[in-house]
Length: 156
Image (cartoon, rainbow, N blue to C red):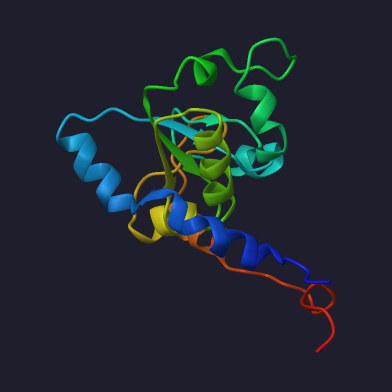
């Protein structure tokens, strides 16, 4: 039996979703396009740092957040089916899966932030702490350094 991996799942749906690089988002905003930023990372990740004004809707509750009638319902997201939405995660992979899901739920203008917050930071765009203060670039750089333990790498 064939086993899908996280990478193969992302690779399978990536061609089916629209992606924008951070600089493309900024260029489009400068031309007057408005975006709703939805961060699909876990709340603990979101609390560390985020794009100012973004909503945290973790991928684990995305489907119920996108519909009325649930404790997790996020009314602004439910009503955004015709708005421009940029989905955000750390590296741009979870947001691809989230964009695919939202397209299935009739969202018309949904984009995954290509390169995620790592790329946003690499482009030196501002991030804020949960208290609204700007995150120093060096702090964000250190946060986005990948730290994978030998156990997480698995057996060779």
